[in-house]
Image 1 (cartoon, rainbow over the protein chains, first blue to last red):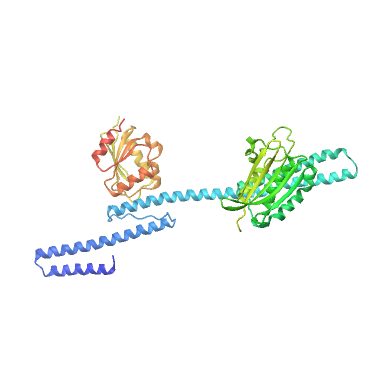
Image 2 (cartoon, one colour):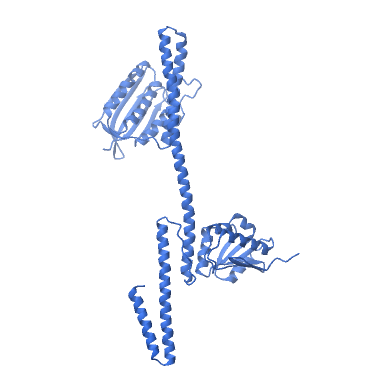
Length: 345
Length: 129
């Protein structure tokens, strides 16, 4: 109620009481009763306003996530006002309880996340350090054996080093998968000269390709060679796929090509790695991207590998905003195609 | 054998048995806590003599009850004591409490809201098994 209205009501009540003083007794009683009623109504309105103010302040507190505020129930308030107060108090209790449960759950999730990060960091170091030591010392021992012309143990040592390197690769792949699943593997996009990157890749693969009697052909047709992507992660994917192509092809041809295209109205770069190797059965074309799945699961496992390379490659392609797919024919070869967005950075 | 008491008045409620229906009127206390809920529960058990009976609850004078008390009244074990609950809601306070028990703290026994005591008693009589 405004001050002016309050004053006006006071004025009217005063006028009624003054009029009662000079009125006939019967009229005076009516005038005094009217004045009392006016003043009682003013007091009721004032109390209601005060209670409404408390209700509004409580609603505002709840909107500000302060759910501990409670409203006092006054006997002299009407039923509906008290009902609103009781309802708000109960709502505040429920919200307070729910908020505490959410905070607890959030804190537990944060603690678990920190524990997971610490585990990944520690386990990476703890696993790789002794393995690197094993591989390093094995190489030193091998050098000594070669120098002293002790041929016998060299074969055993070579097997030891192959197994150690395989274990190291497996650990690295498992940790990569764990980091990707935990959302802790970051991609750092930058401007990359794709022609240069693919050329360097071909040079890196040169010796191992020659060792398997294969030929590597590079065919890059890009009007715009610059791509906004993470060069390290892209290299990781391409080395994995090229490594597979070289592993599953003997005395054959491996092609590395790059083309621009438009897909769904958006520019992309398609990098294809094709081989003339053993191929993949049609019913396993998707399965090869599953963790620990290889085409050849026989006991001989002559092709080696961790079974995680293509899983990681697919996840990395997705993190780079792209995709990887495969087409293949048994005994004719396979083509893996990595598609990446070529939108301007 | 002693007859069970006919009426019990706790800190927060007046409870009596009438025609095999537990009648409960909530008193206008400023608080209604878990301890009060346990006291009222014991009173109902005593009046009912171990039987599972329906209840007519009048909350028109209530000033609200704590969350712990609400949860106690609707705990699963309460279904062993109460066959059904009819709440009188011919008041704003009764209406808001009734809505809370229908939607937020749902009881493990049948609950219906009534504006007429006669209709409530008729429904409760039908719940006696």
